Picture 1 (cartoon, rainbow, N blue to C red):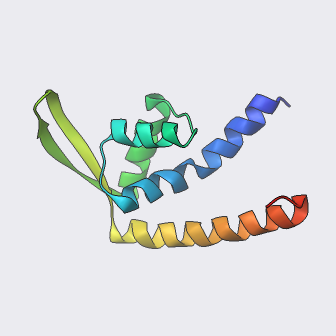
Picture 2: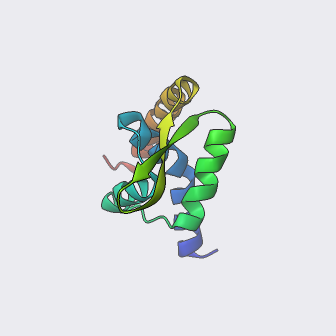
Length: 109
């Protein structure tokens, strides 16, 4: 098992939570989401983000709208749905529990 593989799996496990959290703050188009993830040192490529956004939309956690852009083609803005907010609350609770457990085990705060 390689360190890189383990690190990648850890990042993938929290990506859905991070995307929903970003969209809970405000609607965004994919490039904005990628920028926010990059600023947080969570590097994600478009090939990972777009299928995840589509999956979250298909299970009705996200919705989108089109908006004309002055600098190119129309943009697809994503926003979180009511069902997505409930799901995010559950993920937040799970994250808090996991974070607490890991801190207890590792002794790192």
